[in-house]
Amino acid sequence: MSWADFRAPDLIRTTESGTIPGSMSTARLHPKATVAFLLTGLYSAAEALCSIFVTVYLWINSHDLNLICRYYIALFVVTPIFFVLAGWYSQVRDRLHVYRLGLILHAVYYGALLLLRERAPDYAVALGALLGVTWGAYWGGANTINYDVTTHGKRELFYGLLGAVTNLARLAAPPLGGLIIQLSDDRLQGYHRLFAAVLALYILAFALSYRLPEDKERRPFRIRRALFPGRDQVDWRYVMLASASLAGSFHIFSILLGLLMYLETNDEVSVGGFASYQALVAIAVSTLLGRYMRPATRGRYMMIASVLLFAGGFLFFTEITAMTLIAFGLIRSASMSMFGIGHFSLRMEIIANSAEDPSQRIEYLCAWEIPLAIGRVVMMLCLMMLSTYFAENGLGIRAALFLLCTLRLVTYGLLAHTSPLKGPEAQPAL
Image 1 (cartoon, rainbow, N blue to C red):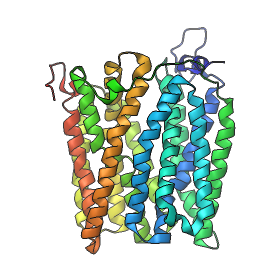
Image 2: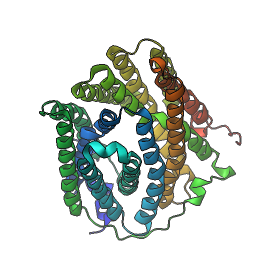
Image 3: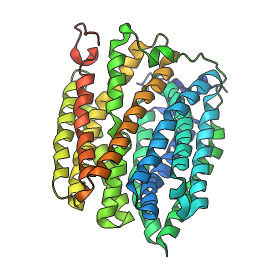
């Protein structure tokens, strides 16, 4: 069986009566779609169960914010390099190879945490680099698979169920991870049990991945046009510039908010509950806006979301308490969902218009990771500088969080210059 047999037209099938594809009453999924759901569920559960607690684990064993920053800088530097390499291999060889490599490396990463235990901070940079290779390999394979699934046929039923699996894992797993830690006789032993549980989930996912069909089709990998857009790709230039300013949206907010909640409560269950609360808000807003947002209105929603996040940033100039974090978590999750829906659809539309050939779109997804990584690294360096020179009353962290909120206005300002948001009139060159 080739990968073409697993593409979306086969995932959603209709009855012979001619019903609309995706109808919940008559559509049925291809049997292999169950494997995709299970793999997504296992990965989402493992990440949600443990990723938020790795930062807390490093803090408990080091009490050094700069060490945590160096860990994430190594992660953010290495990830795009291996993401591009994985994208290349996925095109010229087989995306399942890099997907499985990503699962194996996730198991290796958590295995390393188990072996190093309290000595993990001594190897923080190496662990960050290992996770960077892991992320690059996994997402390089997963994104190419998802690309094939999402660009063919009717997909409402498939993605409705896939979203339900992912969101359920994100809601349930963080509090469960906190409970595993808290119910253990010793806190560090609880972290070790958590890492062992996640290791087992990745091993199970690796075994299950052999139920997916192989992809024998070979494709060229031409990233130069996507990485260095010409004057005929002004929209894509703005998207690439906006990517660098999105740094805080992808991971850094979660890192800082989770750590601050732990410092306020000294309780992993509270940290897990805080993550679930933010996920619940995001799900509610996404569900509501999914009904009303249209291409003609997405620019308006993105602008409102940007202003909302900027306004929320002023909370960090008040006393930071658990309630302050909960209030900001509500604003941030609502804003992120409101902005994210419009941004994702805008980005995919511009990729579709910029790619010379449909098979080339994966190169654009890889290229987009480069400025995103640059923005992440610059933001972590700013955090290190601010936390070092403005340590009193946590002013440095407050300033860094406010800066992340302000950058959303920059992102919107750049994307507002793209032709889908401006309208049909001609766009100026950069």
